Every structure is written in structure tokens, then in C-alpha cells.
Image (cartoon, rainbow over all chains, first blue to last red; front, side):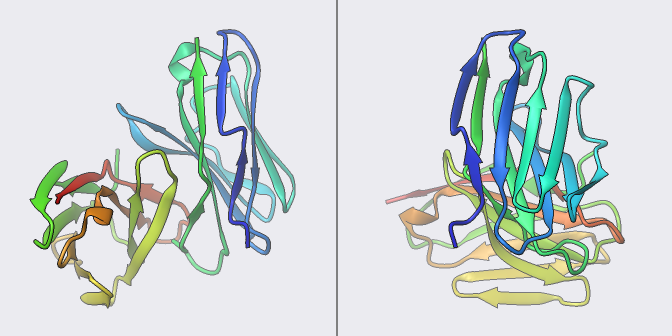
Length: 115
Length: 111
């Protein structure tokens, strides 16, 4: 299995631009999680999906952030417009939901820099 | 507020020594997990301990859980340079699928 795949691995953009991060979960996993990691705030859960349905988006910082999961094998996290404070590493993780707190498998992350 | 808090924030030891990291949490849990993150990489799951378990082993890893104190410890025995990484505990809130991660312990193994 290829594991969780994220693209791009690195993204450098200018303030005000739209940024789209992509994730392909492990085949057969039915839960998908988006995290953001910074030195100041650590690892924060932004949103997670069960069977392609958003369950908890309470961690999404503001309306500039949106996430979709059109099918079981693809999810996007979009930031529009981007700001310098959005600079962070964004991780996608997936799990096979059977009970609360199942093991999560993380992708390599997307390092976003907003200038 | 964060569910898990690791202690210490940073730990530096000599190769071959044992490393112990602690985690405290606030609410009732179903299980607690430990993850490792190498620099520039995603997190990798190490071990899961359920709320009805007190101790669990996996290779050189030993995890304990004390639900009365809401705390857990991760012991890495006979440390190796390759163990240099950040270690995170993660807890689930009862009935919720999401995990909440602590700030992590940065472990450095000196050769």
C-alpha cells in the first residue's frame, strides 16, 4: 500500500492567493483527518470526515478555510485568500473507523509558506 | 484546550540509556496512543493502550496508563540514535473519533 498521499509537498505562494492541498487516503479507510502543525500551536485538528461526510469542523480557523471530500479516495483543503499566518505544515491522516480513537496513518505533509 | 500534555518538552540522553516520557490528560478516554515524528515527516503510530489496560509492551517500548491519575508514560529501552525524534501522546474523548495530540517531547539520542 502506498500510504496516505499528499500533494504538493511544498507550496510557496503570495498573500491573497488561493491554495489547494490534496490528499488521497489509504484505500479502504473511511475516516479522513486534516491537521495543521506549527511551532507555536503544535498539531491541531482542523476537520475530519467519516464516509466522505464532514463530522467535526470546529478546528477550521475561519471562513477562509474549506475542505471537501467528493469521494472515498480524495479530499481537498482550500485556503482562500491565504495569509502569512497560514504558513504551516498541513497533514492528512486516514483511519479505518471501527471505534473511537482508531490508529491514524499520516501522510508526509504539505509545507505551506505564504509570503 | 489540549487534552494531552507531554513532559519533558525536550530530553537528551546517551545512546544505550533508557528514555522516559510522560503524558497527562484531562478527560475520560477510551484509549491513549503514542506517535513518533521524525524531522520533516508525518507522524507514525507506535502503540495504543486501552483504558482497561495498565501496561503494554512492543519491542523496546513500554507504555503504562494510570486512569486514576490521567497519565501515561512511554519508556524506550536501550535507546539508539535512530530513536531521535519527537514523541506525541494522543487521546480520544469518549464517544468521539477524533484524537487530540499533546505538544510532544523532543528526544535526542547522543552517540
